[in-house]
Image 1: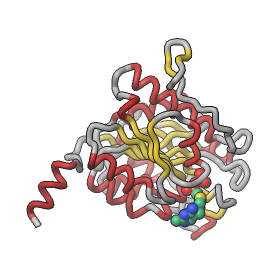
Image 2: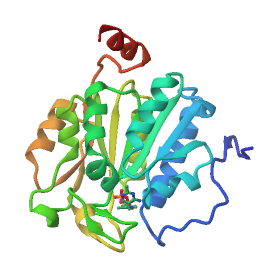
Image 3: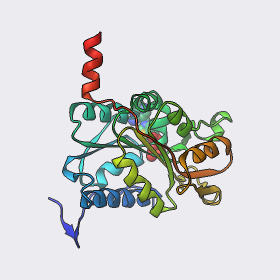
Length: 258
Ligand SMILES: Cc1ncc(C[n+]2csc(CCOP(=O)(O)OP(=O)(O)O)c2C)c(N)n1
């Protein structure tokens, strides 16, 4: 049973929050709750037909703090679980939520294929460039790992994703706006939230100084800038297009041919 707060539902929980004090995950939690509530009010989604699939990790603990239908997936396996839900129940709005470790390291194969098949789900990734819950090992977006950090936004765009975006946890207004669009986008959407890990990779100043918004720019131009800029951290929407969906109908058609 959800309580009403003013005119809006309250989808918080009474679970003790174990994130570190000041963690940027608090900003993301608040904006994700507001995005879901506003979309529900605007009748863009039905909150009772919305499912959150979360990973193991600090970010994944968001499962405990949002009172909507949700499932904890194995580490790195948010996307296949979400895709399975979507295949069986195409009437549901499916949101995946994970860290960069789970999505871009353990789960990279799933990201590439879900983007390529255009699975109709919204994947949200908190990118703090470390495996935070296991105490800060570098992930593949971390320059200290190989000297050549991956840019998963480009990999996902080049895999055919129909929506690719990045927001900063330091710009909650833009974050909420992008999350709302990503959740109702028809097809696969990736939204990366750039954030520091205040304990194991505190590059808060670097993020604040190097982030700039392209949200109001044309997506083709934004994607070009994303490819070219190796130092800055552009935010905004880099891909926004319509493609055929991977739905139960298309799986059935494929199976009947084999
Ligand atoms: C299959 C598997 N491999 C490894 C682990 C250990 N593990 C749990 S959380 C985690 C790190 C999560 O990092 P990330 O996905 O970046 O999320 P964050 O904690 O930074 O939010 C790891 C390696 C696990 N639980 N299961």
